[in-house]
Image 1 (spheres, rainbow over the protein chains, first blue to last red):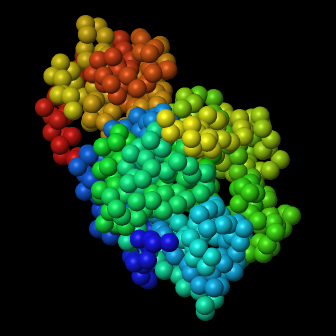
Image 2: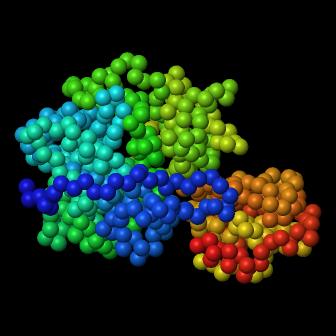
Image 3: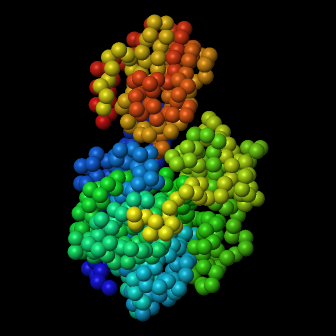
Length: 407
Length: 129
């Protein structure tokens, strides 16, 4: 398989701390997102930085990168993905190549999901766990060939992840950090199929969920993955950094709206998808996230014993629907009817497609049944919330047949 | 950006107030709505509530930010904008008009001296940028 990834070389890149773009509660006088000026000096930029500035994007630090948070507005960009299509610059994310005759065995050891059952052309979501069951990162592993894999990880954790992977590789395996030369654009929404086919040199007639393939754009190879973080049908497009500005502009010219990390966050939250650093962390046992499908039962892996320990689950990740439009925010304490702390909010926002605020929280397991009423201590206010199964938004098109979107 | 209207006065915390006879109409500035982004929730003071100048009297949330609201003048809340409960985006669309937030009565005329005029407010915004 000819691939732009062949030009990979071992790179470690700069070390930057994970960013956070949610602004703090304060008086109107302090609402301007004032990024730490010293932090800004060490901030990395994606290859599309100039495109964002030209579009008038509002930029903020995230995962060690200066990233677009919004262009026209978070709500408009959110609705564009649900009803039409939008494109996200997610070049900040990390891509690794892992190859060699022991690569499969090494990945089975490193990842919580099954890898051996993946055929070339398929990809799978799973965790990189520590021995004690904490989540170093969440990732998607792509099987490119029998002994050849790509792993896609979060921006702020990529250097730590790469070091961890290298520490656990067999001598016959090789890992390459190809993040710097690999661009990633997410084209998402019901119109994304038509837009993609307008861009490609030869249109794609079918591609199933969590499958990927090579395609040609302007006679250059790109990797098209039918995956995403929005709940809508769409693609994660990987290409060389050199090609990315042309691909980005071609998406916009084909009527994909540019969308920033603000909409990316509201879209993923409506689906109940976790964000590392919020719902998943090194300090919390992976079993508590309740994503059992990402934890293989049929193999051993680093952290397997810890996540399978019967008393591993003390709190469980739940979805909460709030009473109105007022949002709970990450870090707020969840309380029971008597005001006793029983958990903590990990993410919260107004959900634009549901017109109500939703949140995710870790809550004591005996209070996690659907319909359970809980309180949230929001400073001067106490919010009321109800435990709800995720996804909050149930009309997403992500799993619908590809052919429905061709016409 | 809309031009800062000269028919009203401003607080440094980005609220505006326009005197209409015995009443004072209060809202937030175009700069404030732009900085907050899409507004998703507004908490207003209650009708009949007595506010003092500069006191906290509500809050505004957008998708990514939350912010307190301060009263530009002392007075009694006579009316609140009922449209904002279900459609707070009106503040983004028309911050100086349909996006007004509440009206005060029983005003203290001497207090306006502590507020900024349009030119002074614009200068403040420029300095903050």
